[in-house]
Image 1: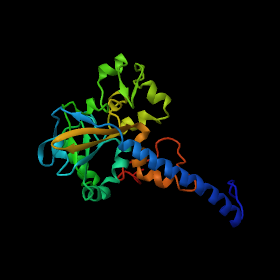
Image 2 (image 1 turned 45 degrees about the vertical axis):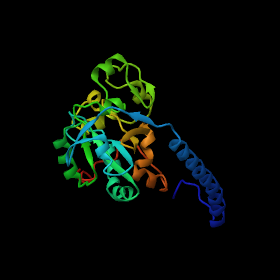
Image 3 (image 1 turned 30 degrees about the vertical axis):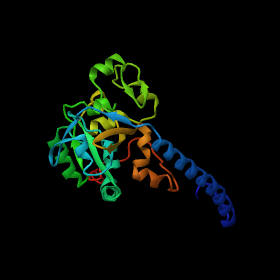
Length: 261
C-alpha cells in the first residue's frame, strides 16, 4: 500500500487548484525574469574568434548563419575527453528538434566545445545528432566565457565560474563550489568521459546568447551550472512525474548506453 498521502477526488481538486495559483504566479515571475534578461546591456565583442565547423573555419559572425541572434551551448567535451560529458549529452538530446524552429525565428544555434573537431564529429555521429557543433580547440573562446579553465587556475584558486571566484582546489582535485554545490558524484561522471576529476572539471556547462547588428557581435547573456537546468528536457518531465527526480547518484547514461548492464 502506498505511503503517499491519499484522498478523495474533491480533496485532490482543492489541492490542485491551490497549486495552480502557485504555478500561475511562477509563470508570471518567469515571464518577468525573461524580460530582465532581454533588458541586460549588450557588450560589444571585438575578439576575432575562430572555430572549426562542418563548413570549415568559421568566425563568430559566421555561426549566426544569416540570423541576427545566436544561442551557444557550452558543451563539456575537453581535448582529453574520450567522449562527451554524459550530462551535457542528455541535455543535447533535445537540441535536434529545436534547431529548425529557432532557425525559422531568426535565431541560430550551435554547441561549442574545446575538443578537436574530428572528435566532435565522431561523437556527433555516434549520438545521431544533426545540430551545429563547432570546435574552439586551442582558442580563447571557452576561456573568455568562463567555461574552460587551466590546471594553473585550479592550483592557484583563480577560477571564476557562475560569477563567483572558487577557492583553490584540494588534493582531491575538486573545488569547493562543486563539493558544496550538490553537483553529485563527479568522479563517476569523469570516468564516463575517460578522464579524472581535475581534467573533467576543467570544462564547465553553460549557455551564452549573442546579437549581430550592423556587422557587430554583442554578448547579451550567459548562464551556468543550474542556470541550464531548464534546458535539460528530461528533468522538466521528471519534475511533473509522481516521484519527481527521485535521484540517488548518477542514474542517467548516454542514450545508447542503457540496457548494457
